[in-house]
Each structure stands twice: as C-alpha cells, then as structure tokens.
Image (cartoon, rainbow, N blue to C red; front, top):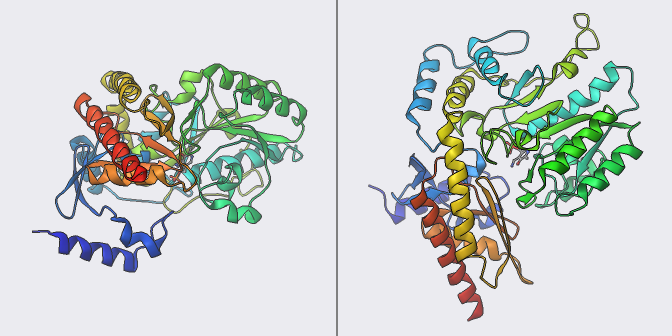
Length: 436
Ligand code: PMP
C-alpha cells in the first residue's frame, strides 16, 4: 500500500506544516526523517512498512514497549468514564487512585502530588514551590537555587535557568534567572565543591536541584550514590530543600524504581515525567513532602496558596494508564530484566565498541548508556553514526558526540545484541567513509 513515493509525500506534508522541536526545519526533509505510522512491541513501523527497534524508548519515555495490551485496555476503560476534568478546585477518581498507588513507592516522606504534563512543567512547579515555601515561612531571603554544571531540567524558562545551557539554548540566557552553579558529574570533586557552596551560601539558598545518580542530557554522566547522599545530608544540615529531578531516571531506568532509592536519599521535592505513563500520554508530577506541602496551608484565598496549575494537569486518561503502568513496572521481572540486559549491554559495548579509535568512553547505569565519540574538528560524528544505525533498523539519537542507548526496560537479549551489532557496523561504515 505504501511506497517510496508515499513516504516522500508524508515527509513533505510533515515539513510543510509541522514544526519539530530541536530541529532545523530548512534541513528536515533532507535528513531522511523517520515518519512513524504504527508500532509493535519495541518496534516502530514507518509509513513504508519498515521496522525500527526503538533503542531510545521514543526519547526515554517508553518503558514496556509500545501497544501494551494492559495499558491499551486501561485507556479504553477510562474513555468510557471520562477523559478529562479539571483538577483546579475539583477531584477525579482516576487521579486519586494514581496518587494513592504512587504514595508508598516514591522516595518522598508523606507525599502530595501536583500533576502537570511535561517534565519541564514538573521542574518549573518544583522551583516555584521551593521559592514560595520560604516566603510562606517568612524567610524570603532564601530565594536562590543551586544547580549543577551539565544539568538539564527542560526547556521552559525556569527549567532552562536551572539547566546549564547547551543544545543551542544559550540564546535564551537573558530570559533566565541566575543560579549558583557548581560543577557537575564530569568533575570527580563535584560533591565536595557543591557541599562547600551549600555551606557558604546557606543563608540565601532556597533549594538544591540535582538529577540523582545520572545526568542524562548532559551526556549520560554517572555519579557515585555516596556523593549524592553527602549532598543530601548537607541540604538537611542547613535546612535547604532538595529537589530530585527524576524525569529521566525514574520508573526503573537506572535499575531501581527511582535513582533516589539507589542513592538512599529522600528529597523534599521530586519531579517525575517521561516513564510515568509508560510512554503513552503526557503526564508529569511534582511530588512534595508533607513538610513542604504543609507550608502552603492557610486561609482560603490567602497568600499561602500555591497559585499555579495547568489546564491538563491530572488528566484522567493519563492517570488511568499511569496507575496500570505502575502495577506492571513494579513486577520484579522488570527490574531483574533491567539488571540482566544492562550487564549484557555493558559487556557487548566493551567487547565490540570500546576498542574503536573513534570511541572516547562508554558509560552505563541500568538501561541508560552513553557511547562518547571523539568528534574531530567538524563534529557531527555521532549524528552520522546514528543516522546510519537508523538506516540499518535501530533508532538511535545522539546528544552532541554521545550516542545514547536507552531501550525499553523489557528489551530482550537478542535485541540488545542487535543494537550493538548495528552500532558497530554503523560506526565502521561512517568512520570508513571519513577515512576515504
Ligand atoms: N528533566 C530531565 C532530567 C530530563 O531529562 C528532561 C527531558 N529529557 C526534562 C527534565 C524535561 O522533560 P520534558 O521534555 O518532558 O519537558
């Protein structure tokens, strides 16, 4: 039914009307973009019927594969009840059930959930809550944020302020608020330097924001759990709020349900997104400890109230899927698979990729892996290798010169083997062309 001509047609229609994020649209149709029509399990299928193993979990959101029967069913059942009703001043049974199911699992004491739609919104909410927390306590001098080098927290202006730029976003710097920035996980002394900064700036700090254990968009940089523990203890010592952004690391990605669990830390504010609905629907959440939440209690319409909320925050369809997803992802077989496939992936990358002259280093935690290439003067090597991998049926996408491998958590051994084989062949092909 479909053919090359049809595919070109879709790409042209796409380029004419759809504006793609982080994409130069003038070049878009020349980059052989993948136009997805449907999916089966962990494979995306394009309009021409070609299959691609989704080795980036559709930008790190997909946990169990596509078209999971239980999730499809949860969605269908909720459509027969109600798709959406506002959470501003009103409730919804699907959202209440989700919050109750999440409560015993999140690494936050006596948690309260403020739902939104994207990871950036969850971060934005956390920053505003931390800021107002101190105002509500009559301590408005505590208004600065400490964030790490190499951090990425999303693309809204507040989230960009906490992030460390890059990806062409530096142009927005004049719109951002200043933060206290200490080195990120690329610096082995990051925790000591961060703790020093916490000590010397404690009187003015509202909160410290970190991506626990792994800085994702910063290039899959992996830290030591004990370093995060020490930073969390310093926050506690000076009563500074700790915000853990687990938008990327949450829901099994790092080998535990949450990376904060591996670090043995319990943040005051936790940001969730991406995997919350298994990659089905846009839903995120800011989770506040009771200590934080209680600071917002006061008289009706009074100044203690959090004056913030999104139209689609707490969407009922998303909540129903997220609740069913939580039941599936907490089955022990999922995390056991993450552990087994992570060590397999690590071994294969070491055996087949690490020896290449173009590879600088390989990093892996759970099913978050980064292969950093030596880009050369021109740059763009990782992008070309990923494009070649896509041509060979494995969907990969780079972050600068880091090739990111983040497959669904249900990936099997044969598929891990395929990813590494295709990556090896793509790397040899592209570097061979360069050498010519
Ligand atoms: N925080 C982290 C740690 C992320 O990795 C991301 C997205 N990659 C975000 C926030 C932003 O999430 P979203 O793209 O859903 O806004």
